Image 1: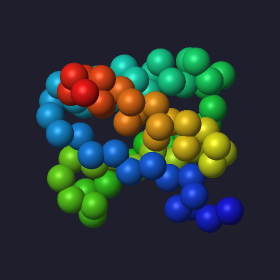
Image 2: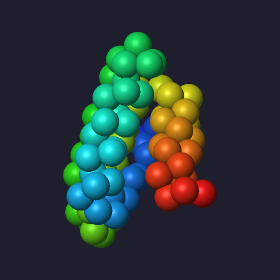
Image 3: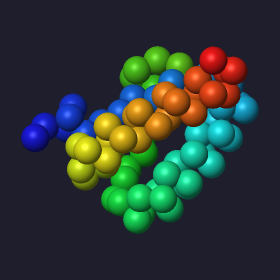
Image 4: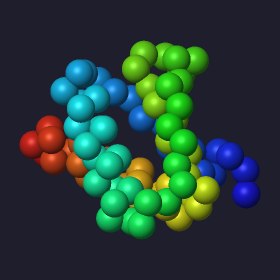
Length: 77
C-alpha cells in the first residue's frame, strides 16, 4: 500500500472551519479507538490545507467520508 492510499487532503476554508476541523478530528479519534494519525500542514497544495495520514487505509476512507458529511451538514446541504 502506498502513501497516497492512506492520505486525505483537507482544504480549510475559514477560521471557523479550522475550529470545526479540530473538534472533528478529536471526536473521530475518540470514536475510533485513537488510531495513529499524522496531520501535516500542506502549503505546497495551496491555501490552508492539511494532509491527514492514518496507518490504515480503511480508517482514512472512513475519515474522508465522515469529514465530507460534516462539511455538507455545516453548509446546510
